[in-house]
Amino acid sequence: MEILNLAYNNLSLTSITSLMDMQRLKILDLTGNGLTQLPSEMHRFLNLEEIVLTDNNLGHKSKETGCASLLKSLG
Image 1: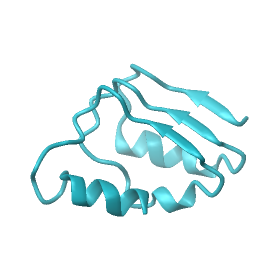
Image 2: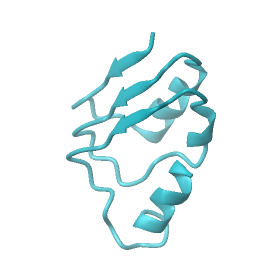
Image 3: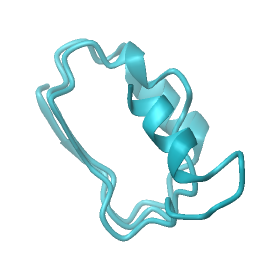
Image 4: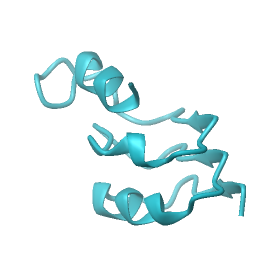
């Protein structure tokens, strides 16, 4: 599977982490899941080219959930 749409499913960080074994995944839509952060292991999505994070709560300014943490996860 290369495209996975999980929009509006109220996913947890554990749920997202469990998807990391999907080695062929290129596009992941996590729209509207109320996420405040992403797993620090995002680098394990080896072939991921696009991630859609619209309508989540990723802009909080706390140290654990702020933009710096988000960018580090995606880096």
